[in-house]
Length: 284
Image (cartoon, rainbow, N blue to C red; front, top):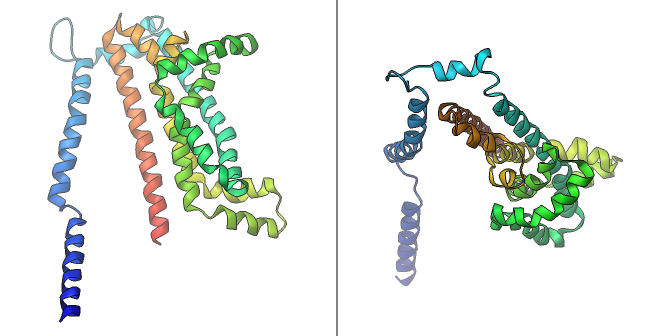
């Protein structure tokens, strides 16, 4: 009897645990997604309506959008287009810094120095706890030396951005690195006579492609939305140019903000697709 009562209680506990962990119904999921989507959609729709507003005669017009491609006004928005090119250049250089420095370091620590994994994680996560304005105060003397060595080109800002995006890139790569048995793969390749260069390029990097792409997309999104560091260090990127243009033509500033939001949204969708593709492969 005691065994039966114990089994009954265990069954109740198990049943309750299953009930607590059940997924919400389709109707509940739709309601949750609808509420969250509405919260995000309200400001975006307001921005779109603002860009279509006719400031002279009332009503709505596409003149603010078509004016971006009007040769007569090209000089008016030239600085903004230059800033877009600067931000894209910064994104490319920052991604290159992350991939060249962070990925080999993480693989080396994972393979040869596993005891240093916590130390590396701490170093990579620290920048997320430091406000950007505080980070700039510390980087200002460093950039005085950087300007003397490399000049004041916009790409030098990638050194600071590399520190800013380090926590996000580390988490994206580490999630993929933990899901792949890189030790077994590297030892198998080495036993077959492959050099470390071949192991890295032909074995490990293809298996870490999902994490590397996710880290690259996140880096691009962060760089395109960064304002504080560029403003305080006196560089011209997309966000600083939007602030300047908004004082003259707020419609164009909002249009470019919408384009940047759409681009970031596409990057997040790609990251989500990469994550779902990885889970599907594991399930198979």
